[in-house]
Image (cartoon, rainbow, N blue to C red; front, side, top):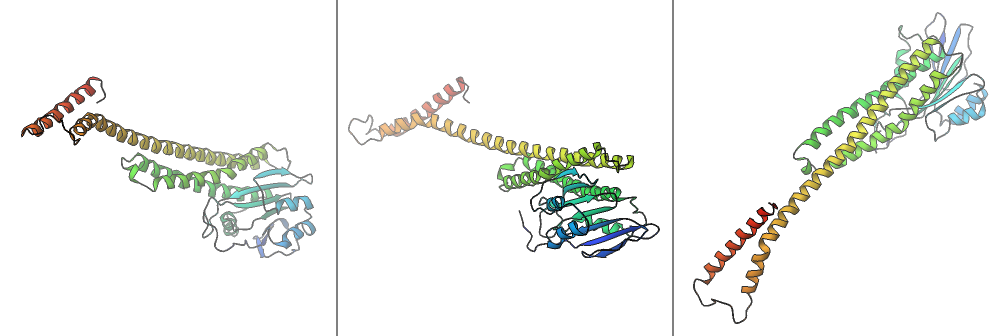
Length: 333
């Protein structure tokens, strides 16, 4: 896989959603003074920034163990609810950054409560950029923190599905190459299949447990979840489930392609060995006879006869005909 030649760092910002006013975006990690009209805020930070964890604990009043879990370098997709009526979700999104492979998925850590959405990532995420572009739009009006998070989750899921669609198209192209009669002469085919299998496994590794997040979330009895929220969660769950099923399909297809190539190689080798065996069987008695006649000792019959060579050639032809006839009789040919 290609690694980023330059480390990407996500910009920090905070968005205030107020009644009767357009959302206000402030860049950087800094405290903000919430007005009486502030309904909720969305804060995004780089979890590798040393100030992020301190800010979460001191300014955002996030429990220290939760802040440490959200800033941990090694995470897997999971979901749990805190006793203070906040939920923590750790997810992954497709890596669309320059010089990066999509399967090197970017980690997104989320805290949602009644008044805030706090998101953390290190590398920039396309879903976050899309959300920032949507905020000034009049059509973008999430009613609360959960609706904001679900919009972000839907963007994240759409990115995964777009990557999976590309994999399906590549799988269809590979199928044509594998079924091509000249597949054995395509020396790059095996490497392409191996690369595809690795990509599929990498994306599925994080997408499958991400499906479980939304299955757990839609059955959670948290009172902050409205019926509209649960309906949106079901849609996201269905979209992720479809992505996982498509990944399974692509993975199974890669296995079929590999077996098909192996079968073609085996058949080709069998045909070659079959031809070699026929030639060996036909020429073994001829080699034996010519070897006997070629020894340089007295007693070779007709050695002085001028027609002896023609007679030997005729004998060799006769032996060949007899051997072929016997092989046909035994159904070896």
